[in-house]
Length: 168
Image (cartoon, rainbow, N blue to C red; front, side, top):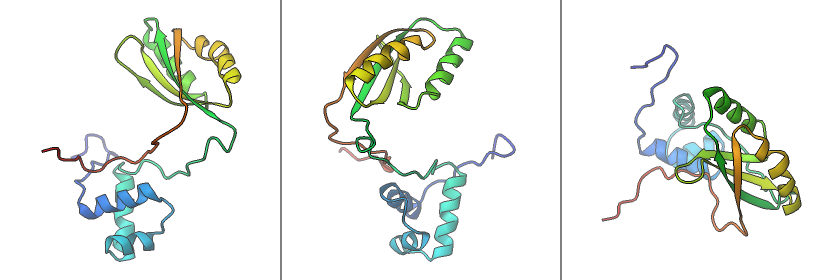
């Protein structure tokens, strides 16, 4: 039962739902007819399943993945950020600030010596150096930035493994 009036509680995924999600993760441009054919359903039931998967939150978005290098962002950098203790308001301001900076693709709170890790796209090292001093170090509470510059990507995917592997 839903906790809130408009909340939709997810139902358990069956084998067809998982197959639809796997196919959509590989190629979201597949038509409903193509998906239906590949999972062994007719078009209408397949369309209803896709709508349910969206309504229940299994499918968050359907997007185009742009090649960052072709549009001028030659570097991917992981910036580890150390912060001072923040009030709730300062923390909210930090999150608001990072969400407004398009070059920060992801930001994670982490355990350990550093407090946050960000995935950043940069056109070159000079730009990134300026970005550190004019943007990152001016974020609320940020006192230190340590950067890991990537050389090349061996694997990069947004696809979620829909079933856990068995190891025994």
